[in-house]
Length: 169
Image 1: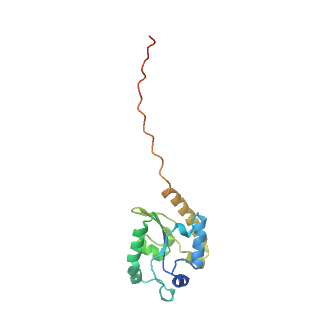
Image 2 (image 1 turned 135 degrees about the vertical axis):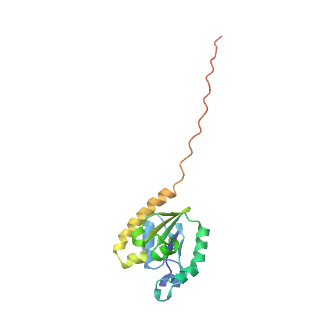
Image 3 (image 1 turned 90 degrees about the vertical axis):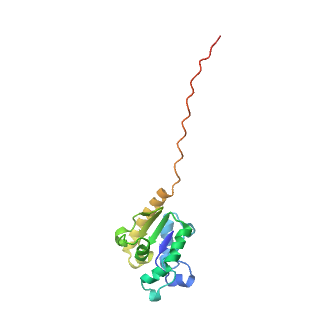
């Protein structure tokens, strides 16, 4: 599951998350680790675009919170990629800044959260693209480990049978 901040202009018009330039970068990053959009559920903290594309207000995030909680409950993800500081504040409050914890794995119950820079931030600050690529490589390693099938069970020991002495006559 991937959780972003809020719909941008294109997303708001099309009613679909990450369809603009940030969405193209997200598609590239997903492909880098062998995933596509059909493999993940993508949503946002806010369900509608804030006026003038400003940062979401706390009361707006709070108003949309029940929807996000329900999405998490329905999807039951094992891993949630948390894109950007606003999603980080909502899903992992008190964990620190995105620049400090990006790419790390934070466990909450049965769910592993991975805070990442938002693709739109990387488009505005090209230096973050390399960080995002490196972090997605780490996501791949996390996914390989977390989603790996369990090892086969140990074979049960076969009880030894005493050899019986046979007589010739």
